[in-house]
Image 1 (spheres, each protein chain N blue to C red):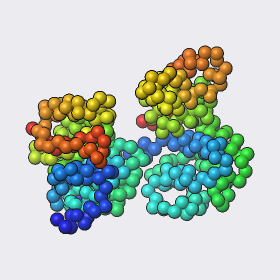
Image 2: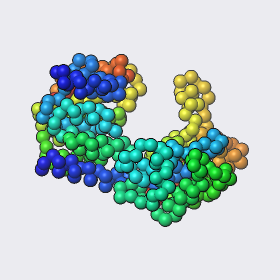
Image 3: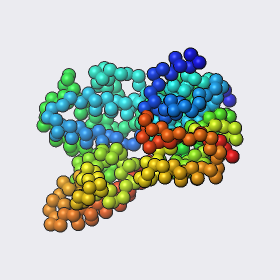
Image 4: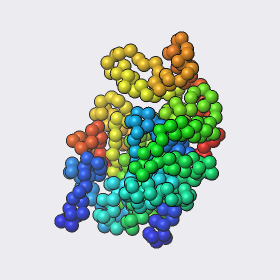
Length: 184
Length: 223
């Protein structure tokens, strides 16, 4: 346990949703052999810390060219990060790029209006025992009270997933919720 | 497949796809911001702008020191395997700009701004021929640079294009019930300055501009 703390001591919860969820008390440290699919990798701040915790491959999907350049630069330094330059809605290309590797954890952080549909679409790539971590930004769906939007999203998710845990990421990220899910 | 081979295949594939997505509108933004800087700030140095352009052409270089980048950029031949690819005229234009900078990266002669404006108008007339008839090329460059690229601009509806640059007044109208703005950056074009009813003219101009930008994007930029 001490080694894990040493590797992540500079990890800032104000810049990463994964670390903020850990601070809130959700136990989601990956195992040594886990393969991870990360949708919405951006320039790779969170990925650079996670790659120290696991020895499996991490696939980072990113759509903007300016951000993907720094993701490619990072993956040339480390030996277990693989960048995928594609839209997260394009599951056919992602399936081709992962070469049939078994995925143990699926993480999604895309602040877009159809983020729930992207998640249900991407769940075709994974098996039943895969853990799904989903960070929801309510402001990009609707401008109303965030509690109302979270309630609506919960009912949508219940059709496809089993909901294990929900937490609000309040002091670190405003109007954000964090879900832990399993496929039905 | 082994993990090494998967990572290598993915890096090569994404480098290829990124190269297709780097468009020439970045050059338009570059020259527009140089003119904006020298109008607003007197005689500034261009270390930051030169660094931005260097990383467009050589995106995977490992240099960090800005002065070192400026020295190396003057000697290079502006061609790279996986960056933005330029044709002969554009290389000559960039060379012309770099030759007119002194050792502190400032403009030697301030009158050369006129030549840079000519470069910008030629560039915009080449890539956006239809929409540069309606509005002055420098204003069109300002519109593109304030939203961050042609891809963001062509997706916007005409009512949003009309109000680019007037965001502060728009949000004041929404939250405090103050009167709504009728024009943003578009206001400085000759068409509107002459007109009597400026609000009506701005709405008409933004309407036609939204159509013409879409035509230009799908004709001249690769998808």
